[in-house]
Amino acid sequence: MKEVKCECGHINPIGTIICESCGRGVEREKDEKSDKLIDMRYDGSARRSQTYNKTFVDKIWNFFSSVKVGIWLIVITLIASALGTILPQESLITKSVAPIDYYKDEHGIFGQIYYQLGLANLYDSWWYLILIASIGISLVICSLDRVIPLYRALKKQGVTRHESFMRRQRVYSVSNMQGNTENEFAEIKSKLKARRYSVREENGNILAEKGRFSRWGPYVNHVGLIIFLIGAMLRSVPGMYVDEQLAIREGETTVIPGTKGHYYLKNEKFILEVYKKENEKEVFEEAIQRVGDGSVVKNFQSNVVLYEREGKIVYGEEPKLRKIKEEQIRVNEPLKHDGYALYQMDFKRDELNKMKFRLVEKETDKSFGEITLDLIDPAKKHDLGNGYKVEVIEYLPNFYRDDEGKPATRNRVPDNPAFVFKMITPDKPKGEVSFVAIQQTFEPDPNTKYKMKFSGIETKNITVLTVRKDLTLWLLGIGGAIFMIGVVQGMYWNHRRIWIKRTENQVLVAAHTNKNWYGVKNELTYVLEGTSINAPIDQKENNE
Image: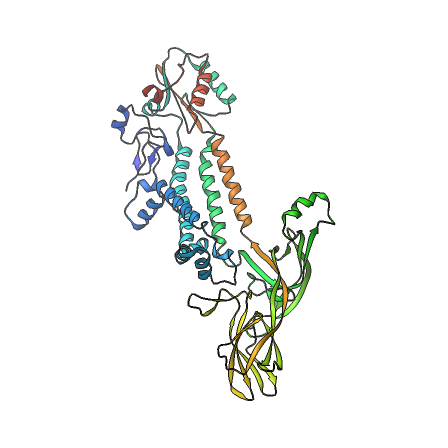
């Protein structure tokens, strides 16, 4: 494909509509006779998407350079984002419940379909990230397809423009001139400079320009959006963004989620303080009265110890921990370390922690020993001595009977624990079965000699912390700031150009702006006031 050489001598890239230097139309004979206003978008320069359409790369480029494609990508992403807000995302539900069970139990068949369609984990799904990446690609290609030819056209624009270019501008006037006009032109240049125009002169012709930087506002917007989208996508990269919940019991030491096993936290003590009516001022009385137990939470905090794991992770071995610091975590007073922040979010008092059972003879209620079971991870086998043993066959943390009447568990939270035991005794070496829940024993076989009897519980307070780490926040901030700069740049300034061309007996005046035509027309009228040159008219308004 060959370049196009204009009669003025300037060589234009293929696809150019009007000459970058003189403004003469590429289809010279047709354009010079036409009265139709020139399409000045990108100053008539050649855009790659409108020039090449042969290779696979050309087709991809042309697809993403379309503004319509970009708008549709944004619309589809917005619709998908809205669907993700109908039900809570999987990351926000309690970890002790299987996600499919949670959505089915809480929201019925709609919740089950919602989960199976992948909407419960929308913002981390591969297809959602592809949508975000596609918007970014569209922004990059749209910007490059337009900003490069626009920059080239504005940089190479000549002062002396062809008469057809002048005549087909929206703001235009022509005046018959006789005699010396040098004094008038000097006055015009003085006024233009006073209005902060950059004035160039060539062969008695004038090009006055100001506010060119406003043309780059939309592309600055695009840069800000691209940076923002990169920051949003980086949140899916492990280690860049963490937003997890940690439920930890008093006295328990556990790994902090999102730290890859590097940090551990111990809950030394959970403290709850409440307002009491008899101790507080009248200002709290109304709030206290609205609470059923006559108290309002004043403060809840977790006294914790932060540990760092030493050495490499060896599965099956107890980690070697090094104490880093002790901290008191309160609402809005998080523990912060190494980019992580642990916030106090919730608590649960008196959760079942351990249960005690006795092996007894049914007739005499004689006890042959007691076992204590950790409700988080109960031991399977227990030796009571003298030939008496107990085995845990099945553990149901949150016991209920399903539609068929069979024992089942709602989740892994020990709200209503139940056990199925196998009891081995010297006179029953094959063992007997006993099904025990809180303060009740079910008899699968009424002819059994022994049973397990509930004898007590131990409870612990649980504190719920939110673990957060965000290494993308600065990138999102930079992207947002650049975007706002582009908005201000494009909204509050406009690019104005005024051409004044002298022929043997005429003076042609034309002007162009990317917005606010009324303003540029009035400004040009002021500049020409007091001269013999006619004030310009808006040809588009006249035609309409």
